[in-house]
Image (cartoon, rainbow, N blue to C red):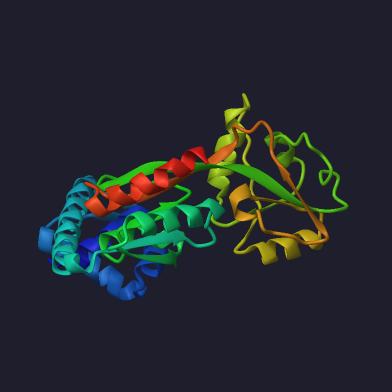
Length: 292
């Protein structure tokens, strides 16, 4: 049994689809299937019940999933400790932000961190949301700022700040001049969200105010320019956090905050558990942004 077998098994177990797992693991489906078969032969048990229509974990597979995660987490933590020990004299803190998610007030807080920690080099990068946990486990970053917390064992997610939700509309749109836009109004028009804001978060806010479940779907734009293009060609409205668009100006669009203002998204500072001293120092500097 090799570590790659465990990673392959966890990928299939979480996706319950060999094709999707192969894409996620950057491997062809055929060698992935062989890897799972080798693991099953090594363990002497069947881990998956696989048909042409579905893939399910067996009872043994469900039990082994927890053990496999613990093994990989222990290995990743050991690797990270060794890397940190070897590089501790560099005094570098590596922070990743989820793509297209840079709150304006983060700049001020990072500048303050540099001032109060003059001997520490702060490296900031941007990563896709689906690489968050891997970047932490592989030791590529010390912390990640994300609009969604990680609830898996072995990770710490601490709330940093909250952002109000805002809509973006063409100037001729009926909502462009309204100062009384409720989240319920989003169900009236086709919607475009600005990544990484997800429909999961929107529906959470929507159903918090409704007795019956309502689910919103729509398009997602990877940047503000693409969102404006999508809005200009039809009657859609755009949705983003206000922190994503404070400098956005276009003569043909309008920006309006949603009310009531309790509809906000929370940003999290995420690290491996237990948090490192670097993480705690960074948190102390960034946390006051919640009150900004």
